[in-house]
Image 1 (cartoon, helix red, strand yellow):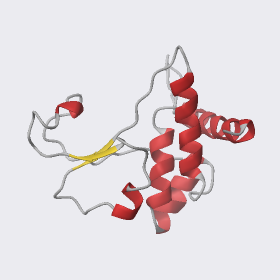
Image 2 (tube, one colour; image 1 turned 90 degrees about the horizontal axis):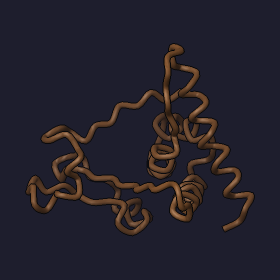
Image 3 (cartoon, rainbow, N blue to C red; image 1 turned 120 degrees about the vertical axis):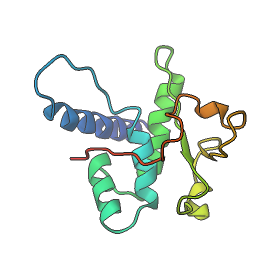
Image 4 (cartoon, rainbow, N blue to C red; image 1 turned 60 degrees about the horizontal axis):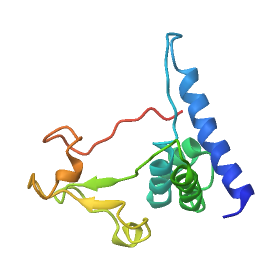
Length: 140
């Protein structure tokens, strides 16, 4: 992977973190967008219309190149001896289906469908039970 590509990806992650920090009221806070940024980058490539524009603005780059940048960020964290990260996206089958052409482009093991069977869905045990998969995020 090209060093400049990695640098640009890390710069975009840091820029999102900086925007988030600006929204804090001044108390003690620890935050980093390194965990959320790769998912937002992948989502940007699948989004259309205003959603795509918002996600492009959030990740700080063109949605067409964002998935490669997400891979660069994940490669950096995977190669680190001090940082561990995992990226996963699950959806319920009764939600509007995700585009199969897009989910096929995701890294192996990143996407799965929930089944409502606790044994089958044990990999998502940290998720709140029976909540929808709606994520609310403040993107600036």
